[in-house]
Length: 181
Image (cartoon, rainbow, N blue to C red; front, top):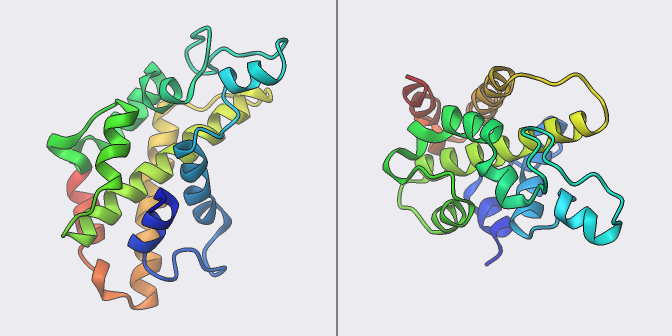
């Protein structure tokens, strides 16, 4: 099963509906593209055009790759660690294949599984958005800004789920708050 379908099957049925804001609906496709290594990272752009800027927009590593951007880059590692360390606990890693292998598995705890996958999706989306903003000359955001945005996005997602009446995820917000300590 593709990760997109796996992520979609683990989400409340209304997660991808048009009632959610645009940013929420972008998280899953961005993660799906990252899983397939189809994002326009520096190494991929170089294969299309030798004159492309291929360095990492966060740390200036000479060649930006998906595995570097998620989550080997020092900037991305700081965001991922602050966001996900306490969510994943002993399974926490900054190694892309390890993370993907873990979240691609099944879990008996649907709340924990949703929290891990949504944290993964929101972090990828926010890092990709920030990377593109920098590539196009916008003012860089600090890691703290990204961490705060991801925190707000996760809290808002659980609030939306609660409002829709899906009781399966009632303990999700509590689990998220517990991971923030």
